Image (cartoon, rainbow, N blue to C red; front, side, top):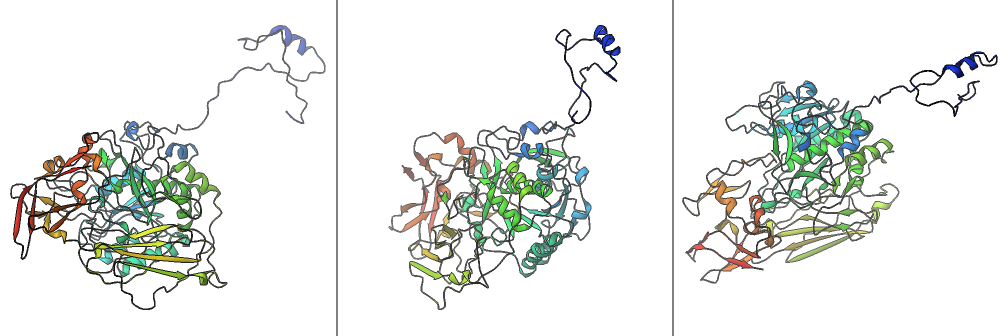
Length: 618
C-alpha cells in the first residue's frame, strides 16, 4: 500500500495455490526481528454485486426488438446495463383504461397518475365486454412498465417506472375530456403517452379544441416544475388510405413528440403514415413471422400480437423514461433535441431520405430514424441544455392569390436574424395557411428551406373530397440558414370523384359485403391506433385479405380504366397495395389481378359495369 511500510514478496520456491501454509518460510519470518507482521496471502472467492441486465421473464425471448435478436434493435439492453430502468419516472397512458391489478402492472401502478374521465371517478379499470375492445390501454401500459424478473410475460422498456392510466376513450370524447386528460397532475406525471387521434380515414382534418390546445401549452410551460410535460404521440395508421399525419393536429403539434413505425426488416408497414411531423421511429412487428410486440393483455393475460403505431409510441415513451432517469432536469425541448440526435437511419427503407442543412438524414416516413435507447441515455447524462425558446413570425402573403395548377410563394425572413428576434438555429416551423379549393385531397403543399430541405406539409389524399383548408402546424428540425422559405402549392386536375367507386374493405374505414356486391357497410370508427386484427368486419375479413395483390406492384400510384362511355375512372391505389396476409406473393410474377369490382357511374351516363377484373402488367 502506497505510503505504508507494507511489502509484498513472492518466493520462487513456493506454490502460488497451496492449500496450506508453507511452515518453513513462516518459521523463518517469525524469527526475523525486523518483520513486525506477516501473512501468507490466500485466494478468496468474491462475486460482483450487479444484477443481470437480461430479464428472466419467460417471454423475454420473444421481445426481439430489445433482446439483440435483430440488428439493430432498440438498444434497450445497453441502457439497462448503465443502470437505467425508469426508476423515479411517472408515466400515464391516455386511453381506454388500464387493468391496474394485472400481475405485471400492479407493482408499478400509480393511482396518482390515474383517473377515469368517462365515469368521473379515480378508478381507471377498463370496462369489460365480450370482444375485449377496451384492452388497448392495458397493452400500451405493459410495453412501458411491465415488471421484470417476476416470471410473468416479458419486461417493459422502463420496468421500474411508475405507470398510471386515464380512461377517456370509452365514452363521449369532448374537448373538455381531452383537456382534463392532458393536464392530469402535471407536477406529478412526467410523460403522457397517447396512441389515438382523429380518424385515419384519409379525409379527416382535425386537431385539439380550444381547451385541449391550452392544456398542451400549459403542460409544456408549467408541467414538471416548468421543465415541461412530455407528450408522446402515435403518428397514425392511415397508410392504406393515403392519410397524412400533418392533417392530425395532435401529431403535428410542436408540443408533442410524434413516433412512426417500421418493420423489423426496415420496411414501411402498410398502415404507416408519413409526414414532416414525425421525429423518430420504433418497431411494430416482424416481417418473417407472426410475432409482433409482447405486452400485457386483459384478464391478467399476455399477448405477442400488439402492433401498429399504437405499439411504437409506448416503446418510445419507455425510452424517454430511461432518459429522464439519467437526467431529470431535461426540458421538453431538450428531449426533442436528444431524440433527433439519437435516431439513426440504419436500415430503414424509404425513397425520400434526404440530408438536411445540418447534415442529418431525414425522411417523412421515419423522421430522423430508429431511436437508440443506449445512445439516448448516454447523451442525456451529458446534455447541457438548450437556449430559451424564441419566436419570429413573418407574413408571407399579403393579398389573396389564385392557385391555378401551381402556386409558389417565396419570402425573405432575414428579419428573424435581427437583434430583438434573433434566431440562431431552427427548431420548429409552423405554417398557417387559409385557402379555398374544390377538392382538398388534390392539394400538395411543400415548404423548402434556403438550404434545399423540402418538407411536404400536405400530400395527395384521394379520399379527401370535402372542400376546405387543411390544418397545417408541421414540426421539422430545419437547417440554421434563414435567408428565405418557399411555399409550393400543387393541384391535380381532371380527376373524377372517387366516392362513386366501391372498393374492397380498408382497415379502418369500410367493409364490402360480398353477399350484395357494391353495398358498403360502415365499420365502427376507431380512434385508437393499434392494429390488432379486429378492425375489419367479420363478414368479409377473410375474403378481403385474399384480394391482395402481388407485392411487386408496390409504388404504383394509380390506374386508369376506361368504361364503354370513355369516361376515365381512377381506381385508388389502395386496390394495388398488398394486405399483410399477401406476403407469400412477394416473389410472384409481376402481375397483379384486381378483385372483381362494381363500378357505378351516376348521373347522365347511367351505366353499370359488373364483374370488371382488370389486369395490370408491369
